[in-house]
Length: 194
Image (cartoon, rainbow, N blue to C red; front, side, top):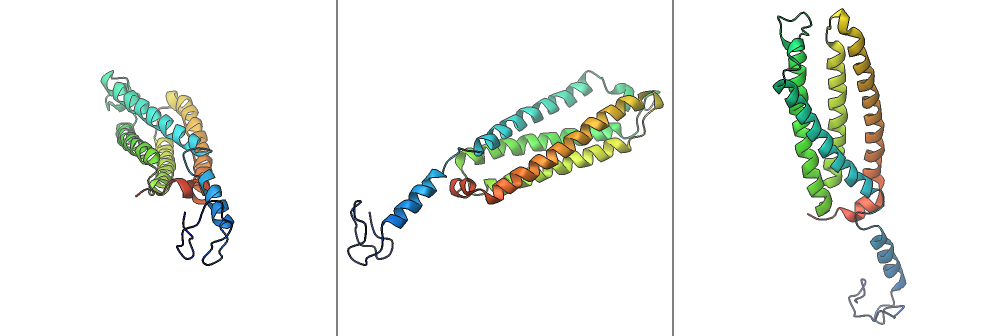
């Protein structure tokens, strides 16, 4: 062990540097305190778990949209000849598919950064949270602007209420995790790799 002040070799049991007199306790206490916050523990476990859930959720979303097209479940709503045709619904489905694929790719990449403890993880994770909320808001606003046949109005209103609740929940969750990423000592001590 060496003195941080003068570089002189110091024994572990020494309380002061024999060369310059600097206290060795302060550095050891600071190192012990800092080491306590290093690693993927504490609340970061929830961040990691949330990323895995995000990957699964987005994978399921991709599967659901693709099967809607394959099984032709959406034909009644996207076919202009249908009496239940909803203008722009096809475009909304394509938009949702593209964004869901992007969120799947980004959340998978974030898992890699998370376990490698990369320095850029907190910034990218914050961008991911913001992008997820922005997507939810745009999706909800687009869905609410669809002109739907009177027979389907009640069904679409129920879906809209669910979407609005998800936007609110997502916004609150994102705000909490963004503050955690910005203020947490564990985040600052853990994500240090280039």
